[in-house]
Amino acid sequence: MSEKINLPPKHIAIIMDGNGRWATARNLPRSAGHKEGAKAVRRVIEAAPELGIDFITLYAFSTENWSRPKEEIDTLMDLLEKTLDEYQKSATKQNLRIWVSGEREPLPYNILQKIDKLVQSTASHTGLTVNLALNYGARQEIIHAVNQLLAQGKKQISAQDIATHLYQPQLPEPELIIRTSAEQRLSNFLLWQAAYSEFYFTSVLWPDFDKEELKKAVLDYQHRQRRFGGV
Ligand code: FPP
Image (cartoon, rainbow, N blue to C red):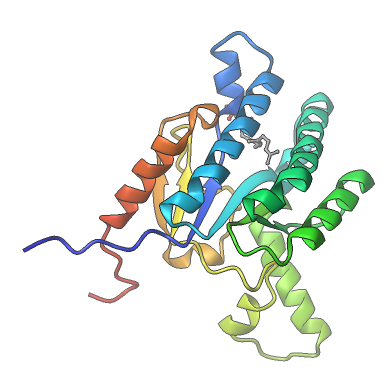
């Protein structure tokens, strides 16, 4: 009898880790690793629709990343700005819809303006949705949801209430979460949405991640048995 396999995941979330180590292994500054990491982002966004993926969440900057040296934060903000400019030009041709999950404060004003413009101008696109987790922390996201519910005067809340007050309530839960660079942690990423996600850990460093690696992760997922607490 042939094995029953899962459909490809609709939503993949990625913890893009290992930029620094990729650069250090080549005697390069960490910024070179982040630049190469931005290229991997492009590759993955291009490959995802061909693999049947509809949503991709990328952990681009965590609330904890502010504790990095100022120089590195500047590099990351600079890369982000360039990426936003790039997608402002190419998102229509690629039919990409851009969403952002995270807190606005204390992101720089120019970045916020570019985010708003990109989100607005791609809202009606029907292709891949790229959700950038930016200044994102999962605990903060849950607190944000609870605070909104408190402001509405709720005395008791349900799981559905939390789910509909997350940063992107329309985003389905990720069937698959990938983390690169051999680290096996969630690091304050999608704590609520990951309740039934499958995890895929690879030792590949993020700047080396490409379509083949994404395919491997998707195939691995397709052969998993998902039980959701049942038998
Ligand atoms: C982790 O590598 C990666 C990040 C902190 C940020 C991710 C950023 C990018 C992939 C580049 C730009 C992305 C966009 C969307 C513009 P690390 O620095 O923690 O690596 P290490 O653990 O080897 O030091």
